[in-house]
Image (cartoon, rainbow, N blue to C red; front, side, top):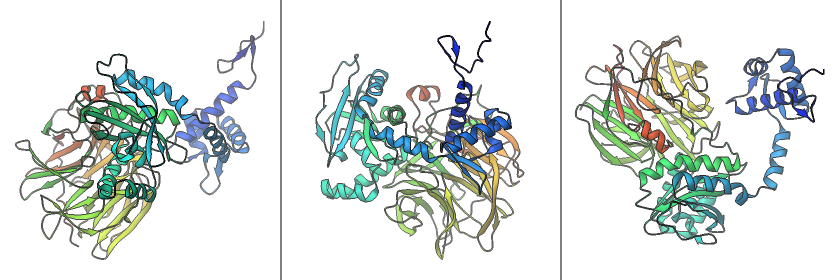
Length: 562
């Protein structure tokens, strides 16, 4: 009797196929390297794959020789090799968008009970090339296959416009809608940041839509997938909930991971909510962020980046005044001259509590596909703020320092720079890079404003959540809001996990200390890219919460002095 093949080997006509197990292991290593947020060392690959070191070495050597992997001698790490790029070119040369998208259109139509459409850019217009209708539709839309619409007046068009290079997009808008080009640019900026575009009765009266771009290997739009339906069935809130579904469909069509930092997966909900968690401000923010306690009037200021808007809230009463802004605002800080400063798309701007004022500093070049993100002042009044690509392109972000001398890049090559803070003795600067699931710490010189010796402070594994905003307490503990983690966590100054507070929402975004004695931890949250089912499970998503931090107290916020 011949021996049975090992489980990893396949059989062909009852005979074991030699080498199947090695092939399976090789493919697993390729996927492991491809999915890693940063290049991996040999020991990391062997450990994560669960392979003996000699076995891992032989497979890696074979993959490197075949140019499927690339070995970097300087860092002793492995990355994807040039042969994969050559193979990808062959895939795109024969790519049939309409045929590839058809199953996703059918799935979306069934899921949403609405019409799903596929569109492409055709000159200065948008051409619909395919459509699927839901069988249960009581009111059917006209079949638009073959129809053309202006790109700036349709969700599909705006989704594709948002992914074009800035100069190319602006040239098209100047031709098509010169009087509205600036407003459309702002809309495209929002669309790029959230990953999908909306149309509210723009192309057709009584018809709303949500769409996401299908991107090629260079992150250029091949087309767009849209869900379209009557406005009474697809109000704006439902469109945002469906945004996640169309993004997921668009990614599956192309297999493109250019927007992988825009997470769609959500960890399972933990058993319960920790004691001492209360709703401070009930809201439905798409991307609540940047909480700032104002001790002078006992108010909490925070932003909804994707609305865009600034909220001025009274946690004692739950009252919430919303100031709509003409551009995205990601962070706030007090200003020594009075009022506040806001980290806006165009730069650091004055904010008097009612309107955005002039730009005080502009660390990002005009027209760049970047935006400012989280920020905070140091004890000398310098404002530190991160920047990131609108589509979360890796390594396009930076950490900037703004003061009376202007703006200066202090750390380049960041992916999604997020929460930052300073130790109580002003010798450390903490900075989260969300896409890399890590919070780093720098040595900080308060007198000169220099940073050095960057090193990991906290690293989170897949499934543990993503570090977002943070706050430092008076004992040096670092409180981190964990996006997709349903909690905030406190880490001791040595990086040891000290405590966790579980929340009723999956996407806490940032935190700050407030209240009369800075003994309450306020936490913002988001509902962007959560599905309807996820929002039903976590209906408070987008609200602000007040937490009992177990005796911890915060540090007073420093004011911008330039």
